[in-house]
Length: 239
Image (cartoon, rainbow, N blue to C red; front, top):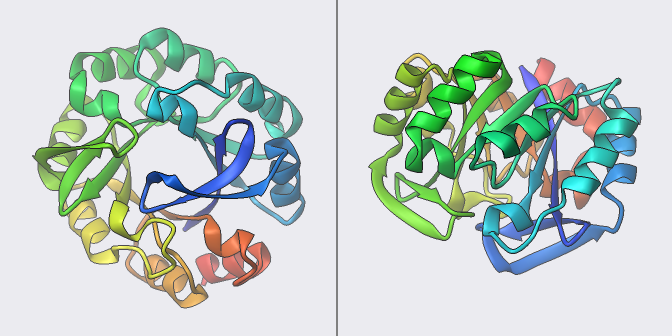
């Protein structure tokens, strides 16, 4: 199972949000590239990078992500998302050497864009971010909750060519209370490769995600607050 240390960027800094709420932000580091370098030194093989400003529609951190990609992109695979809602934006991110672009709002609001992107760049270059609140998909930086169930969205995306889903229960994100493994497993049963995200606070939870046969797990706040080391997390993911 793959483990993805998370680097969420807002106003050029590394931050984490609680339950996806913009006003509940904790800043951990001023230099996202330095944080990426540290994760790579500690053994990361993937990094999950999110441009929160772009997701919220309040700005962008493309230059920061480009610098990060130049520094570590040859040594680690990058998975990058946040506000990728047009073909030029998607292409610009992939041109940085990013291995996988994460499409969130676009997969719900603009299915034709998803199909065009998959046709042009290949299915393996994309993951769909299925962020849910009460079982329904949330979009626009988690500000808007739709009436679309996660399972229905997953089936639609599989039909559009997206195979990898990043599943987050927004209520758990940043709360260290454990990810919704059962919800992730339900999506995997539909035929998707599922990465669990949101709420990992203990090594046992990483082991549980691995035991469930999921594709991967994203870890953020627990690493920044020293609840365990990245080396310990990688070992748990490999168990």
